[in-house]
Length: 298
Image (cartoon, rainbow, N blue to C red; front, side):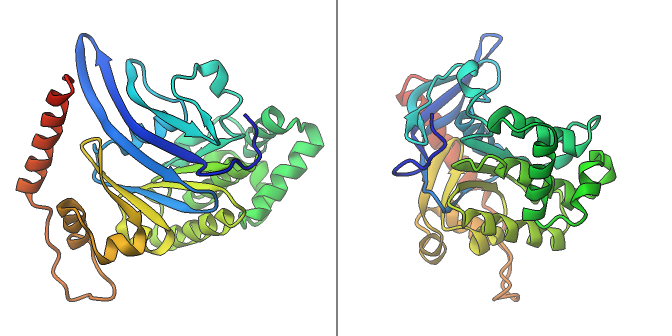
């Protein structure tokens, strides 16, 4: 798989069904998920916890847990069908074609190794750089994400950096090989509001270089400010997709309307927030169970 730009979306997921098999029990996680991430655009995957967001990202990077099985559909990454790939094929693709920025940068980094050594590993594996060349490129990457005193940061351990600085390091590593797709899984949740704004601005800035971004988030305010398009997911099903402006102005699905009604509006600070109706959630869960029965799923 080439890291050069491919025609069409950098990620296309088509009618993806996924189950977890564990100790004789089968749990359906994804029920016909479809979405696309164009190059140079940011697509949001939005929904409450347990809706299937993280499993979509794991499927798109070949990091499914033990017992996970794709039962239908396909995943097309950079123009190539990667559905069912073995781990040996994924090793040369992660970092070079698709990278991830995780929610907690402290767990994404090795606490026992200096930042420079960890960044050099990525550059050696995917770009063939080593020694002084890798160190110089790592420093240039930190400069690119507006890290001051890059040389000091490279000599530091993760615990010696602030949360915002660690997240900048993780973003620099994700962009190190100019991958076509960056998956950001709740990249600002562990950060304070001021640092969140800086990190989101950085993601938008780097997307201007042509990478597609799949942003997983609960925060509809972030989606409004940062993203071009979005998909709303619940119970392993995409309930609504479209351009952000269109979905916000004319949400079609009751669940989307409920999420928007439960989100604070800075342009209308006096509006009362409306909790998501439990009856609506119960109805969606019943629809998911009916979906499973129709297809012989458990």
